[in-house]
Length: 106
Image (tube, rainbow, N blue to C red; front, side, top):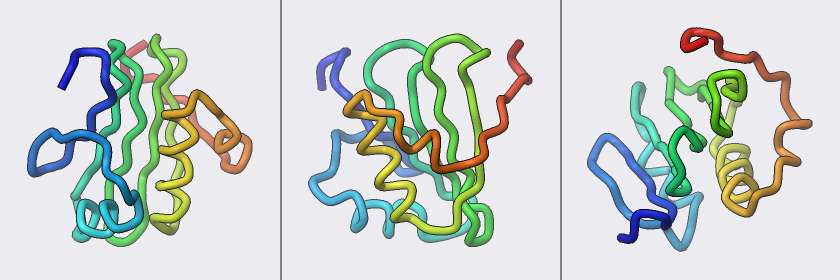
């Protein structure tokens, strides 16, 4: 993998982008505390999801700590759509949810 290529990290390690996000997420987020982090090769730019007992925390960060947000979603289809949009540089998924800015790193 090249440094500037998107990567996917789960509790099992790091890999390239999957061909089918729903199948991948179904496996990667199967149990509580499972996670997926997708980075685009730039520092502090990522989107991630974590299974918290069947509810999913979805976060994205677009650089600085002031651009780090979190929301809760109820299904993996929403996560797959958000990841694909984020990787394409689109942010339509942002308007579809109520986001909370994370301030722990300010």
